[in-house]
Image 1 (tube, helix red, strand yellow):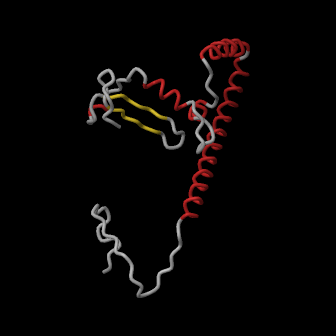
Image 2 (image 1 turned 60 degrees about the horizontal axis):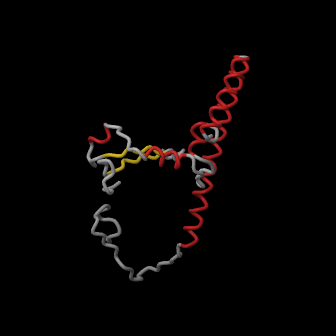
Image 3 (image 1 turned 90 degrees about the vertical axis):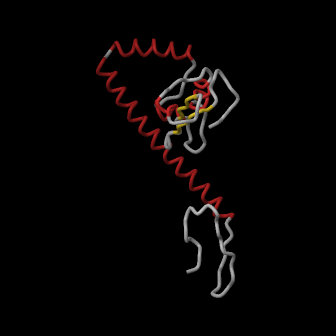
Length: 163
């Protein structure tokens, strides 16, 4: 995307979005040619924008991309430090129990992803119903004159032309 106003020498943004989880990766670039794909120079504020996107609730998937990828909601840094200390104490007590807990968390992650997939499917079906309700049904009779669509794009040559 771009060009944008110059920011630390960066003019363009290369954006990639995962189709299922809606996880976003972005790279600030100076040019818009093929060489930028090989480099991963991150701009100063781009990571903050990505964090905000990844932790925001998305209606089509019914959760946040962060929760889809990691299986739990994100925490503020202070909460994170406290939780890490608590988990280290718990893990050091019993390795077998910690392994069982990890298996349970992985199963929960699969359930979260299945739930998001189902939510995305329902969202798409709802959008299709809304779109289809707005389409007017037409009945054409033999011999009735119609407008001929002749696009200048030529993406589908010969389509919609009478033989």
